[in-house]
Every structure is written in structure tokens, then in C-alpha cells.
Amino acid sequence: MTAIIIILLAVLGAALGSFLNVLIYRLPRKESIIFPGSHCSECDKAIPFYLNIPIVSYIMLGGKCKYCQAKVHWHHLLVEIITPLILIGLFLQYGLLNLLFLKYAIMALFMIPIFFIDAFHQIIPHKLSIPLIPLGLLFAFLPGGDVGIIDALISAGIIFVFLVFLAYAYRFARKVDGIGGGDIWLLTAIAGFFGLMSMPYVILFAALLGIIYFLIFVRDKSQGFAFGTFIAFAAVAWALLGAAQFVINIPFL
Ligand SMILES: [Zn+2]
Image (cartoon, rainbow, N blue to C red; front, side, top):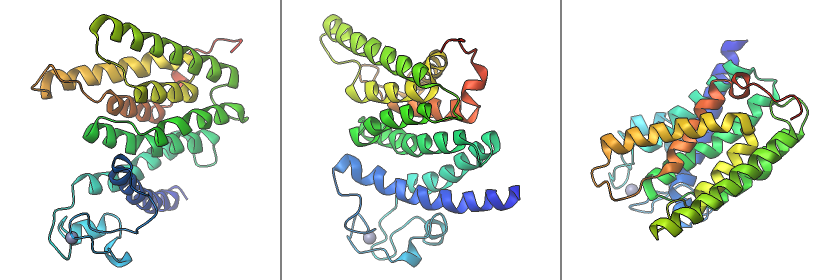
């Protein structure tokens, strides 16, 4: 049974990954995510369904458009591979008929496009970050979750107020914006998903990854970098590790 579920999640995940690729390309360009259908961004030719099979088509066509030979960016293949892997990882962690599987699968489906869009464009689209806030609170409200509604509300509230304060303090001290609105919405949403006790771990992990990346890969140290990318990575890693099971719950929350 487990093997069948894994195969089904692999197929479903690859198909969802293919859709996330559409979001990754179109959201930062403010294009509609529905019309037109899949098309080559170079020659505008429509891509028929038989050339639009996740993973398979990319490899068969050698990562190029069939008509104009334009290169298809490697993130398309990567997203179609990591999306099913994350779904399978969450299934192995939580089981299929568990609210937490659904909760963190939905969260991950938002984190994957946020990871790539922030990495490529240094923006976190509000269409992805803001709907996550009510979604996280909804999951806290439902029975069978790992984070209660009061914990989620307090967590999201504290993180939001703290980050807004930090953003103003940074702007006041340095006369430039250090923390973007996108980062604030994203972390507020994640706080609602994970609860207050998880947030120090998630933020520290994201900051650590960001600092390592900054020291090793960023040549021009005066430029900023996409913190949302590391927040998204840390959030998915925390969900895959079992999120709240590491956290000591405060009895009254
Ligand atoms: Zn083309």
C-alpha cells in the first residue's frame, strides 16, 4: 500500500510541480496564471499536452523548446522533481490520512514558488504570502492539528508586530529598507502554521542558511539578498522534520 501511495504522490507531485513552474514564471511578470495555456516564452508557440508531461518532456527534449530550440530554464525540471519528493517526505512523516499531511503539503506548495521567485526576482508575491495567513489559522482551528488556534494567533501576532517594529527600526537607523513587506507577510503566515515555540528554530535556521550563502556566494556584499528563499527552505525542512514534535508545548496554549 505504501508503495502505491508513493507512486501516486510522485505523479501528483510532478503535475503540481508543473503548475508551480507556471506560477514561478508568470507571477513576478504579473501575467495571468490561467490564460494563455502553456507556451514557449521565446517563440510563443503553444506547447501541446504530449510535450508538456512533467520531467519526461524536459528530458526527452533535452531542456529545449521543440520549435525554436530556446533553452528551458533548469528550475522547471528541479521543481517537477522536488515537489513530488517533498509530498512523499511529508507522507512518510505524517501518514496520508492525517490533517498534518494536508496542512504541510499545502504550505509546501506555497513555499516552493516563493523559494524560486524570491531567489530570481527578490520579491515575494502578495498573492502567495497573504492567503497563507488565513490558511495557517484555519488549520489551527480544525481539530487534529499540531498547533492550537490561540497559539497560532499569538504566534502570528507577535511575529508580525516584532517584524514591523524591526523594519521601522532598520529604516530609521540605516535610512534604507532592510526588511521587505513580503518577508513580514511570509513569516507571519509561517508563525500561524508552526506556533510560537517553533519560530525561533525556523528563523535561526533560515538566518544561518542565509548567512552561509551570503558569505560564500555573494560577491558584492553591499547588495541585499533574498531572505524569503531561505525562510521558505527552512519552513519546508521544519515541516519535513516533524515540526511541532520537537517543541515543548506550553500547557495553556
Ligand atoms: Zn520556442
